[in-house]
Amino acid sequence: MNKKESLKLTLAIALLTGSALSVISCKDDDDDNNENKKTEQKVVTPEMIAQKDAVECVLMNLAGVEPQDTMGFNLEGQRFEPTIGKVRDESQPSERAVLVDDEVEASLKFRALVANEDFVKETSDGYVIDLTDMNYRLDGRKQKLGTLTYHRASDGTCMGYAEVDIPCVPLLRRISYVTKDQWGSNGWDEYGNWESPCYIGQVWLNASEGLYYLCVVESKSDTDGWLINVQPGRSNMYTIVASNEGNKGAWGAKHPVSKAAVEGFVKFCIDGKYYDMKQAIRKRYPGKVFPPVPKTHGKGQTCSWDSWPIPSNGDDGFGTSQKGYGHWVGGTHNESTWYSPGDGPEVLIIRDGWEGSYAWSPPRHYRHQEVYCMAPRARYDSSRYWYKKTYVYHVFENSDYCDWMNQKFPYTANGYSFRATPPSGFGSTPVFDPADEGF
Image (cartoon, rainbow, N blue to C red; front, side):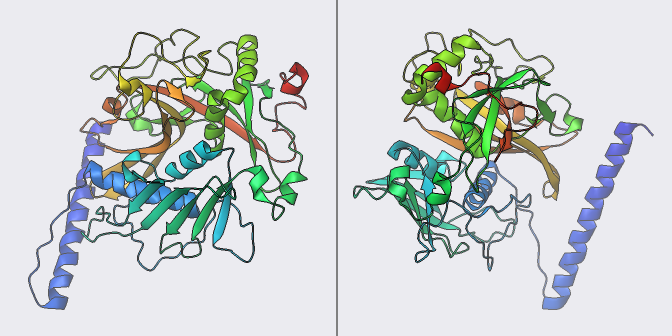
C-alpha cells in the first residue's frame, strides 16, 4: 500500500469512526429522552470562523486566553483574569492603564483588540466593538462575549479610555490609554528607574545570521524589549506550518516576535518624529533594516513559495523615503483601496503560523497564520489591525489560502526579546546608535 492509499484509508477510518460515535451518541440521547431526535451537522462558514477568531482575539488581548481550535468554544460559566496593561491605582483594581504616545495610537490600540475591522463601529466620540451576538457554535447556541466602547478624552487625564463589559472578564471595567506624563507616580517609578540595554532606533547585528535588527521596544522592569528584523516575502527565516502542504500553504517566523514588536516596527517607520533617524539608517543599510516591497502573486497564479518574486524598487515598501508614509508602493495607482486595508491590496506582516489540532467538523486540520494588516500606502493615522487567517487543508482539495494572498504584500518578522542585557549573539554594542549620530 503506497503513502496516498494509506492516507485515504486512515481518513476513511477516521470518518467512519466519527460517524459511529455520532450515531452512538444520538442513540444514547434517544434512550435517555424516550423520543426520536435527528441531529443535523451545522456547516462551518467563513462568517462563523471570523466571529470565533474575533472572540478569541479579544480574550487573548484582554486576558491572555490561548486560541481554541474547536468551533464549540463555550464561554458560559468561565472566568478569566485580566492581563492587559497595568493597575496604576490599587484602590481601582478594575481599571488598567496602557502606555501610548498620543490619541491616534490610543484609538489604534483599541481597534487592534479585535482581529477584524468588520467588528469595529464608529461612534460620535470613538468606537465600539460589539460581540454580543456571535453565532459560531456548532450546537447552534448564541455566544455573548460582550462589548468594549472607546471614548476620546478631553480632561487631560488620558488620551482615551474604553468601557469594558465582558462578563467572563469581570475584574476589568475600564482601560485607560495614557502617555508617560499622564501616568503619574503610581506604578511609574519602577519603569522610570529602569534602564533598558537597547534603545529605540539602535541597529544591532546578529553576526551568526548576518542580519540587522532594529530596536523597536525598550525593556522595562516587568516587560521585555524587542529587536526585530522584517524581510520581504517569506524571507529566509521561516518555518512551514504543515509539511503535507509543501510550499503552498501558510508559514511562520523562525523566531516569532510579540505583537508589540510588530507594532513598534510599524510605528518607527510611520511616525514623523522618527523620519530623519529612519532615513539615516536607510542610507547606511539600504534594504537591510527597512525592506523593499515584494511583488505580489495574482489570483489564480501558482501559490508556490520556492522562490519568492524579486522585490521591486528599493525605495518602495518600508524603505520608502516618502514623507508622511510608513509604507509606499510605486506606480500610478490612485484607487482609494491603496490607502486603506481591506479586501483589496494589503500589506501583511506575518508574526507567527501554526497548525491546530484535528477537528472533526469539518474532519481536517486547521491552519493558522497571524498577521498585522495595513494599507499599501500607509499614513500615521491610517487603519492598522491584527488578523488571524484560519483555513482548513484537505488532502483531496485545495485550500483557500493562495486565493487569500491575491494582491497582498507579505513580509515576515523575526526577532529577539531582552530584559536586562542585549540578546545573546548580538554583542554588547549596536552598530548604529542614534545618540552617536546626533539624534
